[in-house]
Length: 181
Image (cartoon, rainbow, N blue to C red; front, side):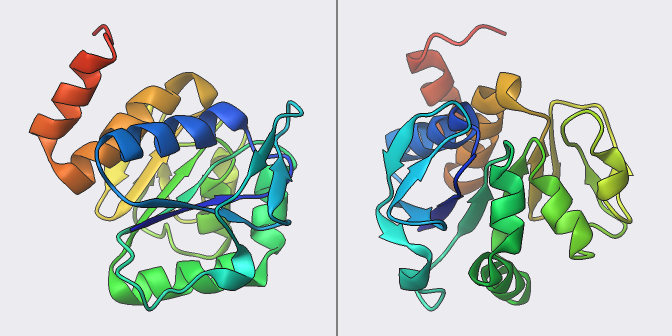
């Protein structure tokens, strides 16, 4: 199962694209409303989350946590004690942590990127504490998957599908969506 955390001010493309592709990959994706059951993105699009943060159960078979970026969505995710606790549990259980845009800064602030290669939205590189920041669109370093921003939401989502379902399934998804390149 994959938890995708949504907080008011999230970047819609960075959240919905992975949700959509991971569900197309036949994975169980649960959206988590950190700031309530209905969460409003940074461009005013309201999304009804599957559950609230208080309903998250890290004792389930969780494969991945996904943190969309956007402002002030990233700040609202980082303020959540539940989100931070789930990230800590993910670290102890070797669960994948995926973050895009400004959201990799949360992992950096928690000291989790030490010695890792990561990418983020332009201007957030210094917040990837301890990481080697790159300008690559999507970076995987072990169980950390980071991406630059909304423009690479599709390659980010395809990488998540590849990690969880294999390259054959990811390629089939890419082809079915008529992705070029």
